[in-house]
Length: 431
Image (tube, rainbow, N blue to C red; front, side, top):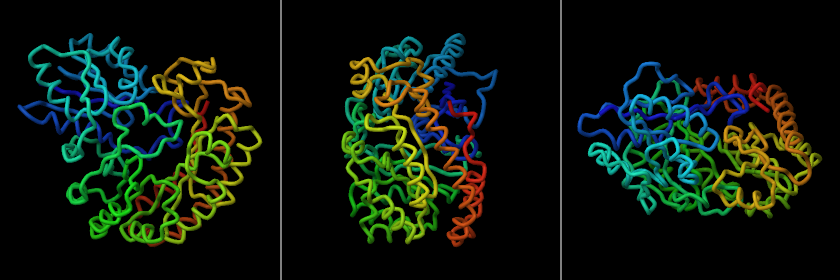
């Protein structure tokens, strides 16, 4: 059986990310599906449309796609193309889990939740021509049941390798979709298993794609003891609270952590409190300074469009980012995904102003903010990226010199960060 696994294109004008060329990582979820498919002589291919095109001539009996809200229109076009060739289409991921009925207009089957426990059943049902419309595992996957992804099927074009140690998050941020999908429960893998997988990865530049690796301090410290001898250089997303734990910072720095992404979200404490983000905005400068003491670069992620946001405090935020010497900043417009509680709340208030799913991509405003128009918010985001890009260009060389130890050992990542900073934002991709 020919199985084709596709990640529809993420990077497009007005799309989801600041940088479009080099910051991509392989789709681990498709690698796991490929591992679960590697029986009975199946021929498996993975295509990430951001690094390669789908060939005009390609044979597929079964097509599996991971679908986000803003990639759904592209996924539907791909589904139509392959259905015309009599292939069966299975969709999974965030959007199918939230909007299964919509996806079934284009797919033969939809996976709600995680796929590890249902994918083998899908293959059996396909072979017996009894494919069902809905597959729901009914329970979060135990991490011991997650196979190593088929990295041999990934493109060689990725700068960073990716790995996942945990799934889910214990926080309850009001804007986050994790509350509305079946995999929000926090779980973790055994450190020995993670170490075994890392040893098999040839690329020593690694990104942990966990939503929140740092729920259990003892677990992280044990994991660092496994990772440190591997001599990796790696990045991770983390809660702001880790800056208060010198023991933990020392452990992750010694184990090769070179960059941490924090969801700062806002400098307005009213916005943080309203969205149930458990942190203090007046501590951000101290947080950045503390990680810099350990030689760890800091990326800040900020969300625009909360009800307490005004043009004045958003533009102030861009100044604060420079004052606290952030190494990088990403801006996201608050995006209410259809099927989430946030979307339903804004819809009840008649504040959803756009139903084009391709615009649900963090750089577009699809709802009516409290204190400005949607277009005004988009222009503020554009101005923010211009301002931060200028700041990064001025400080990029200084930051690389400051981190010369890992820059010499891993010149590829130093070049990657420097070129991104000098290149700045691709403004043609902003609204």
